[in-house]
Image 1: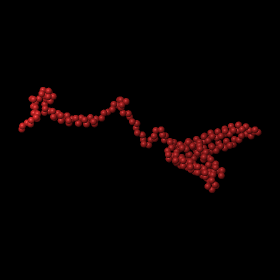
Image 2 (image 1 turned 90 degrees about the horizontal axis):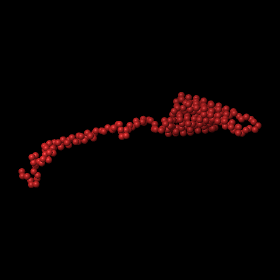
Image 3 (image 1 turned 180 degrees about the horizontal axis):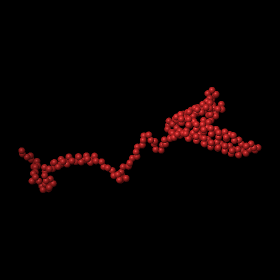
Length: 232
């Protein structure tokens, strides 16, 4: 077959230049070597991609910091006390105050609808115990502590009213005023001593904390309602 004009003639190994022969001494091994290189390169590349570089644990500046363990889903957020009342607790507290106000109003109604002192006391303490969510035994303990506190408050008030200023021809108004202030101060101290009895039986619970903050006011409302029901 004739050789076309202009086409380069293949050169044999003998016709290659010395420089070419130095770089590629054997032409037959060039193609297999190139194919082997193409087959090895992808394997090496994938292996290098899958290999994970472990961080230097000794480098505190660049090493990964240990993350705090996840908190329980039932744990409380930071800065929030487990005794802090929730929305439902505050709502139930507001409803209790409305019920107690209605009971106090019933002590001032006509004889047929008016509550007796015993009935008023039972309803007042019962509604409060229901709000506190305590069982029958705890309710009895709470009621006994309330009775003790009410007795001490009544006794202190009676003692204060019995103290009459001395009859003098020319009474000293300043001395009488100081004596009256001293009597009321002593009565106030007696109230704070009495309130410790029901406070001691309250538990560490959100609703109990709401009553704890206003226990003296609660006791005085109970005492006033019983006195109002008895005076009619």
